[in-house]
Amino acid sequence: MTKEQFAAEKDYHLALYMIKALHRQGVLDDEEFEIAKENLIEEYHPVISALIGEL
Image 1 (tube, rainbow, N blue to C red):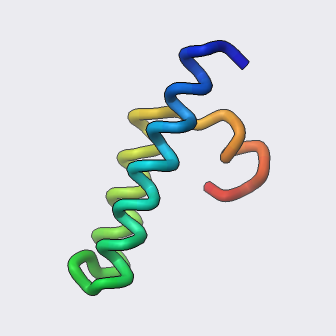
Image 2 (cartoon, one colour; image 1 turned 180 degrees about the horizontal axis):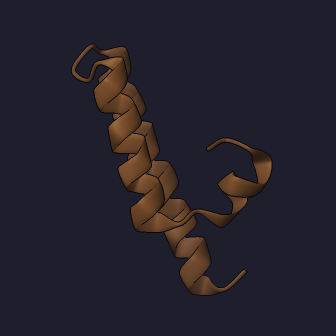
C-alpha cells in the first residue's frame, strides 16, 4: 500500500466515522447516510475497506 492509499484509507474511515455519528444522532436519515457514504467511496477510493466488504 502506498502512502497515498494509506492516507486515503485513513481519511475515508475518519469521514465515515463522522457520518455514522450523524446518522446515529438522527441528523442524517438512512437515505442521506447512504448518499454520503457513496460520496466518500467516490472521493477516497478506499482499498482495504473494499477488500473486507465494508462497502
